[in-house]
Image (cartoon, rainbow, N blue to C red; front, side):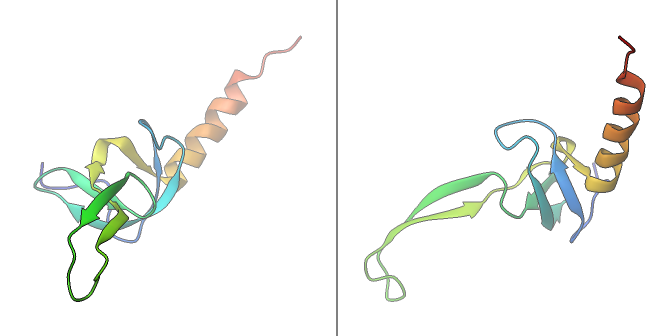
Length: 92
């Protein structure tokens, strides 16, 4: 998988998983692995060792890459929702 359907700085919507429905900006793409890094999505907690920069050490939250197949560009997602909502209306 070398080409992805999203690129850096695109706005995307998460389609499945714990963060389903969240919107974020693509920070980085990893085409070889088929993964993308999205701002504010798929946050993981990471323990940091004590260092000169962080004398106390601590735990931080940061984004982890998720599968590119789990995201869709926001424009396409909104168009799909609009199309489905228009056809799903049934008279009473």
